[in-house]
Image 1 (tube, rainbow, N blue to C red):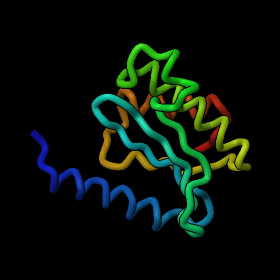
Image 2: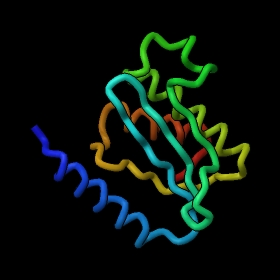
Image 3: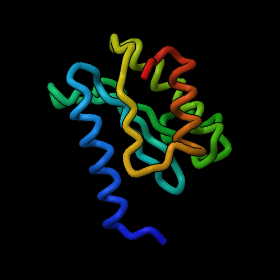
Length: 119
């Protein structure tokens, strides 16, 4: 089992690398729980969220079997790409946080790319 400390260290390491290499683009931040997945496009300079989507949105929740599978993550990826496009965002930095780029996280990222966001 992975300890909470190692998860926090991994998340901090990923964010530190993102902030060191990125000065202009907003970041696409992912949070994955056991039952749902959430995505936000965040402008760190202004300190505000530009777009957000999750499996709890009314648009998605009725059409999903569960919020904790790859198809739900893909739907959230398409929705966040659409909402970010409406907010005028075309390029983002992908912030996977403490999660490995596999499964639901990878499905969300690929769907966001297909939706028009570039990393």
